[in-house]
Amino acid sequence: MESQDKKLNYNIILAALVAVILGILIAFYYSYAQSESQINFLEQEKAILVKDLTLMKADVDRLSALNEVNDIELQDAKYEVQQLLDSVGKLNFTVGRLREFKTELRRLEAKNDSLKLKNNFLRYNNMLLTDKYEKSQREVEALRASSTSLAEAEALQRRKILELNQQLRTKSYLKLEKPEAATYRLRGGRPIETNKASTIERLRGCVTVLANPEEANKEKVLYLQFLDPNKQVIEDNANTITVNGNVYSKRVEVFFTGTEMPVCDFISIPEESLEGGEYTLNVFEDERLLASAQFQLK
Image 1: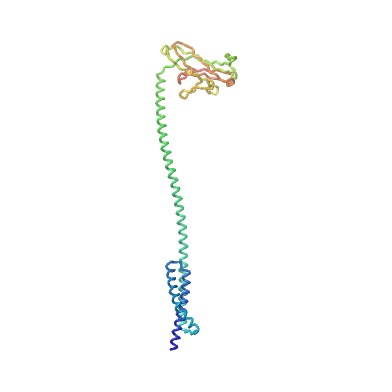
Image 2 (image 1 turned 45 degrees about the vertical axis):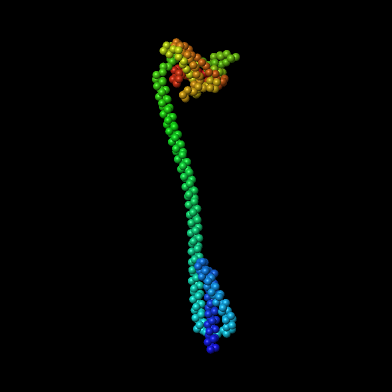
């Protein structure tokens, strides 16, 4: 009877030791576990073991002094411990793989963040391109409108040119002869004729209008154009006359009686503004050159 009690006590102690070892291994497993489900499972196991150990602690303290161990049962215990160690090894492998998976997950998350940044950059560029396209469309529309306006202006100009050509073909012009130019310097307000360029202050142009009874009693306009040796228009008191793009020195209004008559007028220039060379006097009616003469200054 006493032997059976000892055997029973031994079984209890062995079970307690196995339970303690199992609890240690489960605690080790718990320290490495990352999954929420494994953690919950180990916490439940830990609670059960703590409860069992609490109940058996008094028996273990009472029977620990006996120290009678059965060899066969000890081998079985060692075998079970080895199995538990193998399980721990498998657990470590699983935890390591889990860490690898987490590392891969972090890498994929970083790559996804990079793709998001690139996508945002592309969206921003697309927005800029859209704005540039809309601006270009507005500029194209403005250019089209300008082109239409330019075409209308060109058509109007062509019509005016045709009208002017028609007028030129039908209009009769004065007949002029004997164009001549004279140059003067002033002394006490009195003009004195000279051909020394540096002293000249007045240029005078004259022409003879031939008789034409058909044009009698009409207002006519002649234009005097003085050109320097460089073919530049000489100004009258720093002023010129521009008609349809043509530049003249002086405008002369004439009341033509139909009989032969001389027409003269002059322009004023600053002293020492001219230099030696060949000068030209042109006489126009509207845009038609009717007479021309050259004169030399020294």
